[in-house]
Picture (cartoon, rainbow, N blue to C red):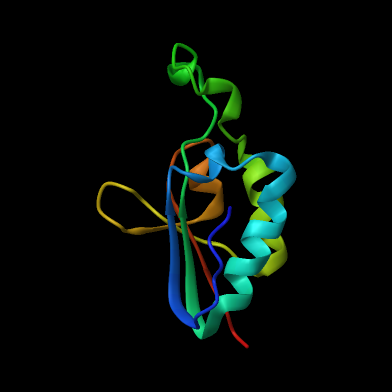
Length: 108
């Protein structure tokens, strides 16, 4: 959450690390990252989704629900979904509570 994002970027990616950003800092962190993206740049987010299989993990309470994560991301644009295993595109109704790549392209 302290990264300055003071360069123009083509891609910002997150791989299971947003859950470690305190929720009170998350929106500001995402906004700064989004502003740093050039037009046509990509936001690539891969976060574990809160599911029973993670209940024994010490980070379980920090993991996002689908609605929570997409609530943060949805303001930036349409979310495209890709399977983690082979990067094939998915429709939103196929995603359910799976951990997938959520990708948002910055149009302007």
